[in-house]
Image 1: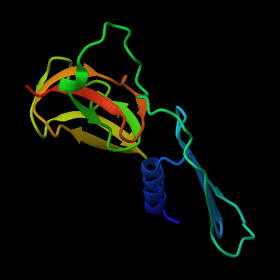
Image 2: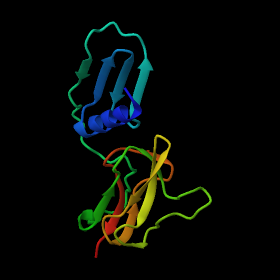
Image 3: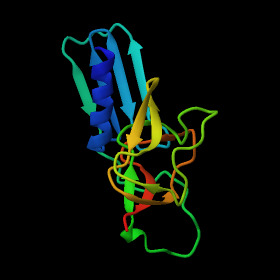
Image 4: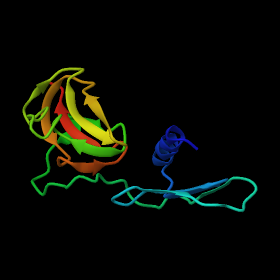
Length: 160
């Protein structure tokens, strides 16, 4: 099993909502767990006596989907008029292209479609996350250098 197949499996499990998936093939044993603060992927090269691949999938845990970002205790605001920019991949969120460079966007920054908002590092590759909408950044929902999950909210954008 090559790296690309493992990445595709991780993406599939993240989208499926399963809490844990175990896969055993010839000399590879993979366990993917979701639903905790950190996604754990274990890949081991072990001799397995099974003749055919075995896939176990547990039912998704009945947990309410809550954002991983800290929740502000300020008075309730009407966030429904804002567009949420979500993470397209699992990885580490960075607000700057390099430690010595300025951040891509701040609260109040006017953005247009195609502007780079942040980068997400996944498997030593830095993926630029571009805006799909035009507007103004209202809130940054994730701290710099913190892990993000697939589909986790990153920014709130006011499209008006």
